[in-house]
Image 1: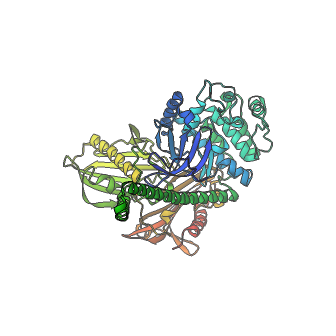
Image 2: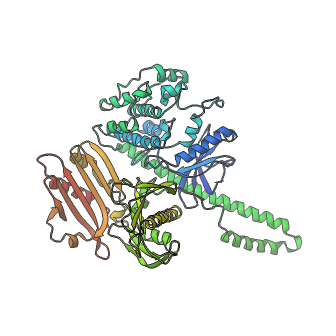
Image 3: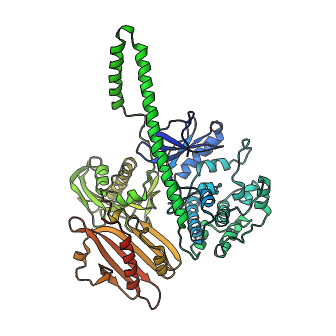
Length: 627
């Protein structure tokens, strides 16, 4: 990053600018902070492009389309203003280095890193193509590597630019030559298959350190893309068939994103970055945090100087020689008072996206959320919010029709998402709302977060004074979901958890990859919720939960126990192929306790699931934060 230059804007919309992330032919990318405190990357279009009416129309359409992306592998749209003098787009800021920088600093990726890159890119493209979008400019600089996997950036600008099939501005590019598909290089119609070709080129670059179509000039590179045969001898053998299929000259012969994911999941390695890449990612994040902190201090200092200068000019303009001392003093006092009372430049966003981090979802206080969202808005509260056995929270109100309605909010603890639900046609925070099949006077509404790992928020409504009001219950559940999301886009209430709480911990992060692979074999799928992680492979499966629930010694008092090192766990379920253990970390309040729940299924015959579960639990306990 770089410091803001004098010609750079200090505010774009309601967002304060902090630093410059980069500049290019399309415009500039600035680091900013929203009125609610989120860091965003704001892409502001170059004035030369802003005067192009057709470009504005395409940019407007692309921003609207990009908001439909709900994958965990893309940067969520937070805000935009396509009709501004210089249009801009604000997306979630991802403090991560791009693939180009990682390979340059750390060298080519080993097979485990290539598997994580391939599965992440395929998963991202599934969401992109499902939204009827084509990225068209997948290159190393547009792939960011986070600790969890790759994230794609630069959708709106790239799509609006590359959609132009007529004359282009001087110097404007149709994409990055070494990563363009042959049909794109030849100016033919571009489909989703062009993105698949780019993935093949990206994987080659990540595996070898160079593009599959090197050259000293753009014409030479483009000729290689269209007519040349890529040299893949340095690509690992177990990855070569996948790369070859992606780099097929004919787009018809390339796999779809779903087929690409199926192939990538069969790569015989764990999905994990090597240590040197993990360290580089952590250093990049620390650098970004330093720039954010330093840039904000400088911005506040500049604003203070500007306010002082403004007050000084106003004072001198109205002062007279006879009373100059008095007026300067009075003006200073009044200026300080106005400064303290002013709300600043920031104004609330009119229609922000829902963008929660994984850490926020783990620490979310559902009782505070539902109380602030529902009480006083959808009805008068009866009693205090109450925790639910699921870990969510419920509240009862009397609505405007004098009917009692019970509402509940749960950050879904299962892995089903919105399966079996029906879209309502409405959205909250630019995310579709789904409704389940009502049961009597009870109805559920659900929404999948765009960020934080695609977690399902569930809000239910139950009409307590009638057992036949299913339609009213569904309407109430939908309105409650809109109110809850509205609260979360403005302020995210978090639980005041101690640093040693397991609820702060990423449930996938406590699993040792070698131990887990010894149970699952080649990993086929990974699913997560804020407090649970499920891994399934060819040889077995693992599900681990870090939760707060009823004390297991009271719930399973008669169940047998297992000694895990110096710790005692309860065997809650056991069969020939499955073993479930629960370990109480420490009690909390009201007969509740933080605990580790671990379930292992061993497909091998004969199998010994409990021995494997005990070994894995012992390792998990050692990784938990200490009080």
